[in-house]
Length: 137
Image 1 (tube, rainbow, N blue to C red):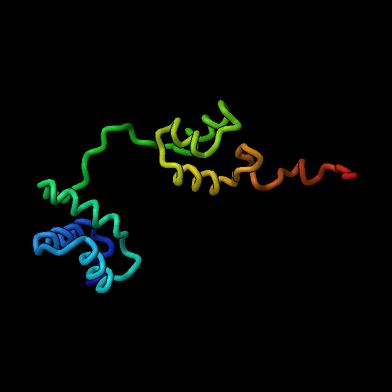
Image 2 (cartoon, rainbow, N blue to C red):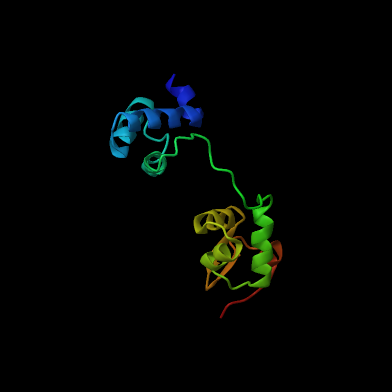
């Protein structure tokens, strides 16, 4: 049963609502559910978010509708931004695209880019760079 709850976000939210209606705190709820289901199932901040919603009188367990356009190719957007401003920091790229800084950083890492000397560069050498006969003094 615990395994099925891990995948069913709606059922977890029902558990949050039940605990809220029992006048338990978000911390108590987090501890109880994590003890039964597992430590890595959700963050304490998630419980706090739902408890805040319940305190505001919103007992709807569905996610709010999103009004912004869906991002289909975030990687392409990031690449375009870096082509325009190659010396941009992760924070600058994130704010100009309206994305989370950690998400941009994770996507850049996945694509092999790392911050070096104030700009995001590819981590691996290209074949040309590897085969060039550069002598260092």
